[in-house]
Length: 452
Ligand code: 5AD
Ligand code: SF4
Image (cartoon, rainbow, N blue to C red; front, side):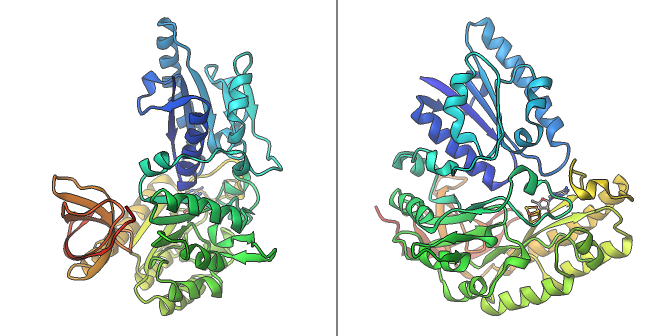
């Protein structure tokens, strides 16, 4: 049996895509391996969102090329595939710069991999066209055993692409225009996952709350309505969604945070900056105060909300005072977790052409200050859960024998002293301690058992 090694970089969409590629190649007679050295097929599923993404891929390809040569001396062939957003952005350039690469395939085309690999026996191939057909229709369904292997919490892609064109972002170029999958296809996939033992679904998409898929009645469904439908599926106890845009938080979605017990009290809602001028330059189409008011409305619907965000410091032209606006917004709103980055110019995006790029040292200093504040807030949030009783979904064995590890409703990792429960159970836990990266707790009530 031939072996395939998939290395994925970047966001959850890439994790999901990497799994789909692995599913598909299993039906083509490949077994997945975690060791690149023994792989007959190496796939790098790349990310283009920040930093010198393309350069990193080229240097990784240098290493894979050495491996290919080494295996060749033992008479073993290795095919190399570059997939994902760098593949989409660089296309043919990859074949020119990396002679060892056999196939370049964009995120919309990986369902063609079997055919591309057949072609690659005699020539090097690139497939980065945006196809008309839906790649998900062409992907094989993973077996129950494969789903189970991946755990009780699963990603499910419900939309792809983005029409927002934030001036710093490559996504609208690499992933294309916003496309939503139909409700029936999403429900079918969710039913299959639930049937294999999945308890938690995280609905994913580049701009997931812009979801507007065709419903079974022919009308267009919003994310709020879709969440209600998915909450009815037996076995599915928890729902989450990521990543969202503030402009697409509609009333129905906010109401779902109040009305749907399965919808976890956690929201990743990137704000990027607290300065109105920078938000405008970023083309975010909202102000800092609009974001504050929106969060107030969502917290009215779900008082326990754990809020998470992305931030960019050092966007072109950002002054000290404008950076302070971001610090103030963070202090006003309060975040349970977050991701923050130095602005990095992405070729082809409007912001990369803007004057007044902020010096690296200034970006570094701002990032350190922001991360300090965000880390203080994260720890305060975690400490605030000590003494509370929370439902924990058990996901895997814990760090030590007699322990299990799971997630709280707020997406915190929790270590629990227990050996009489199963993966997939949701147990009620009293949180006893907050460590730097996980909480510790004891079971007070077995709670909701997973189906055997
Ligand atoms: N520079 C820095 N951060 C960026 N992000 C997207 N593009 C850039 C860029 N050019 C960040 C944003 C986004 C997250 C996924 O990555 O904060 O929300
Ligand atoms: Fe990029 Fe998100 Fe803005 Fe879309 S909404 S352009 S994915 S940052």
